[in-house]
Amino acid sequence: MSGWWIAALLVAAAYGLYRAFYVEPNRLVLERRTVPVPGLPPGLDGLEVVHLSDLHLGGRVGDREHRLVEAVRSLRAPVLVFTGDFLEEDGALGNLVPLLMEMTRDKRVFAVLGNADYARPRRTERLVAVLEGAGVTLLRNRAVTLSAQPAEGRRGGKGGVANPARGGEEGGAASHDGRLWLVGIDDPVTGRADLDQAFAEVEPGGPVVALVHSPDAALPAIARGASLVLCGHTHGGQINVPLLGPVHTATRVGRRLARGLVPVPGGSVYVNRGVGMTRIAARFLCPPEIAVLTLVRGEEEATPAAD
Image 1: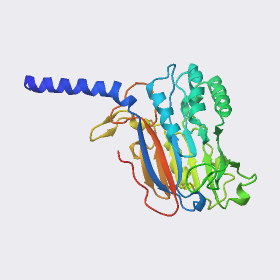
Image 2: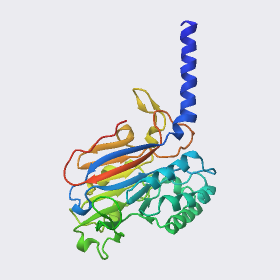
Image 3: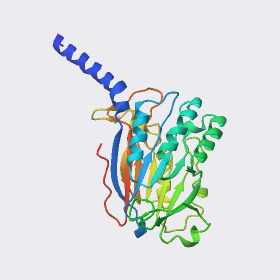
Image 4: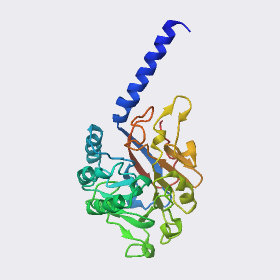
């Protein structure tokens, strides 16, 4: 191999490393997708949902987190969901509080926990208290229902979203007409997922969107009646090789559900690339994301991920 080729390869490798460690981790991308939900009530047709995952907050809040808050605050979507792994370090709870307070204003907010959130019992206890104190509805193997508000209410869709009702309570299983079920499945990575409990109060045939940290539980949730499952955990692979895709997804389902919107028999799965990183503070061909999903009625073909 000539000296020119060696020099070119060294330059390409240096640029790749620079991009992976300094450029892509901070290139927060807004992804918009339209997803059909059969049986979605007319009042929720066009409902926009902001989906965030895998913040992996550490001891320092950087430009990426500040841009995340600004971007979420600028979105008109009335619903915000988190699919776990809020924290990378125990001491990051103090950083999470102001971010949550800014991002959750004027939105209905729901969350499930991820494996990193269960790393230590004390971390979990404190995180749950912080989330609930910020007005986040934490769904640990349970379901709630969302209903439309009149147009003068919250913005989004053809009106807005009223406060959630617990399944089986007022506005729950006995009167799901005009409502959307939101099912939260606890973390499958640490063995806490209980689909029987999570779907126990869901009325058969009702429209269902499920939240779970890892896509390992996505297909079982679809089999239980969910039309759409939102998850994270994979970081989109975090490091992707040209023509080959993700190096590692940390799931049993592998590359099939690595990132983006994936149509599957019976519904769709959206795997968020996440915001933060773990193990290695680098991303390549896999920038962090904010997903905005527009839920529509009918059987329209879901718009697939562009990446």
